[in-house]
Amino acid sequence: MTVPVATTAAPSRAELAERLDRVRARMRSADVDVYVSFDPVNIYYLTNFANYVHERPFLLVIPLDGLPVMVAPLLETSHVRARAGCDLAYATYAEFPAPAGANWFDVFRTLIPTEARVGVESAMPIGIFERTPGTKVVVDVIEEARLVKTPYEIARNVHACQIVTAGHEKLLQLCRPGVPEAVIYGGVTQFMMAMVFRDIPTANIMVTNAKAAVWPPSISFDPHRIPSLGMPMENGGPHVSIVTAQVDGYGVELERTFFLGYVPEWAAAPFAAMLEARATAYAMARPGAILAEIDRAVRAVIARHGYGDCILHRTGHGFGITGHEGPYVALGDERALQEGMLISIEPGIYVAGRGGFRHSDTVLITADGCVSLTQAPETLEALTIA
Image (cartoon, rainbow, N blue to C red):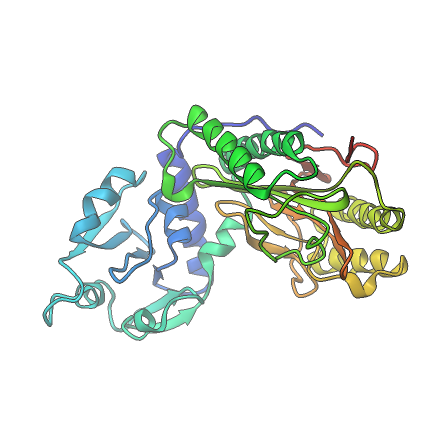
């Protein structure tokens, strides 16, 4: 299958308007009159403005018709205007804390009729929830709208995948026994960030980052244990690489299990089992497939090889404007895959005290299957580095 063409262009007004239309359609389905977003990720999705959560809140108030209203501190209003790619109305408050009548919540509550049905995010802080007027309905309409990507979003993620693909190639060039983690982290991260700002000189640093690291075999069985910068790479393996990036607001990842010099005799079997589980997920990943059923089938493959007790996590998760979002290739997600979704496929086997086995790619669901947007060696032979 052909990988879509990449783009580095900023979202157009038409693109942002389409996203807002999708949110409003879900608002109507949920029978809410107004929607309030606090989550900076959701606000970025709809406006192209990225904020940092602190004691001065930003709130996006979305009516069914008319302009969304950005509630923002005076300090930040010009910042919002400079970055937002859509038309907004503004409700500005002076500072926090402020005298009675001048706080953010005094401005905010004037925007919503007390009789309105008001949609709010499930992750909304309780302090904002309690100050939101109307009858509140917890419904994540923006997250739902984000599940299926527009062609523009896909093109941006394709570009981000090009960055991490090049970064992973650089990582394998640097990784040798005795090389400290700091050399890999620093060298690959700087390499990828240089690529980002070469391609997008105006990239917003609030939604741009890159990371690259390797879990050597002494810790690769513990996939969320963060390696120290002084930790050296080791002979043999399994080593597990992690290369991730959020490129001007679009997140992707690429990971591989590899060996330095030789493959320990015991490691060939779990590596092969991981590859078979991965192939099962790829074969099932197509529109209409139930996410939980994919995870169940993958777990069955791993268990059949005798590694059922070595499963620590789900088969995958979604990508988009972050590196971790819905949908989830997990037993608890009963939704169906749809064309235009982006997921990771990353079944893992973790043999306690010996090492971990996991490949991860950023995968696009197409009309009749799926295609990986990231590229790296896959076989045991190709991933044994002399």
